[in-house]
Image (cartoon, rainbow, N blue to C red; front, side, top):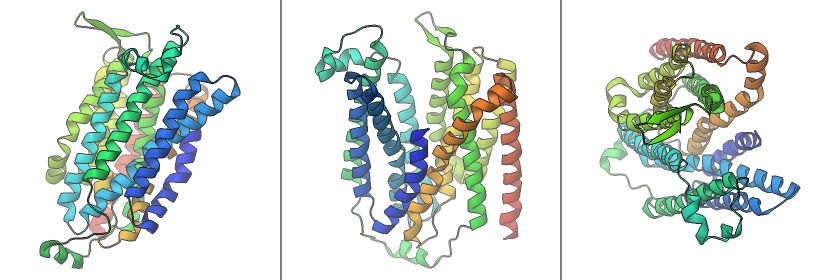
Length: 382
């Protein structure tokens, strides 16, 4: 909750600051340094005792989590800079490529999290002296994963800085220069409605993240070809991530053929409709299929909103602000779900996950259907 509240306040300010400075790379470096520092503090907290350990964990987690999510803002802003005066085709392609790396990261993190990486990593670090007991085992596993995340963060940021073009240089050829005179405009009402839909999508996603494991029951396992037994909840999340990665490779062509808005709304409807299937599957192994359907939504949800909502051509002064508003929908949804969902689940739905998910599905479908119909008529009327 603390991390989400900090992100809600920080991300819009970051967007404004990006626009004021008209630079992206310094913010990428700054956020990477802060995020890496948070990871180091989080890892070192295992050697601290008492109240100081709690403070170290809290500060380290907030720093790493907020900076990790906020890194997407200058990243997407850099994409928008590259797309300026080059049209929606380039915007679609670059955003999809960005999202493909995001989806790959989700698959990789879930995969590596299932392996005891600490056995291979910690012997070469200062954490080798921590005794291996049953009590310390989860902490050591977390440290191993954090070292992996730290390595990936530093290497990916360095690669981005190396490959990205110089800032402040706008080399437009004759074709792209002609596009300067085009009146490309995003209607404010359409922008607000799409933000509402995006926020609702994150509400559904966060409820899944918060309660999926509790609903499925982490003790329920599935025998995988006689080789290993894995938690059903974990398999559902993994299958969803794999579907997200696979669908991200189809987004560019789907957006071209059906339109980014239509694909986006279809993904939203699939997401909330999938909660109805839980009424039949329950927390059985069939819930893995539902996890896959939710994964089908995730890639389009993360990607298409940036294809649909962008700054007007020639309006460089609001690129960071626009991206930050879109990105802030996720921590805002986390706060709402964190504050209210537990009360609703216990007092309104009496701890019945199926009724809770059913109500969520109905509410999401009603809101998304209304917004889709409204945007269709509104866009045609204007």
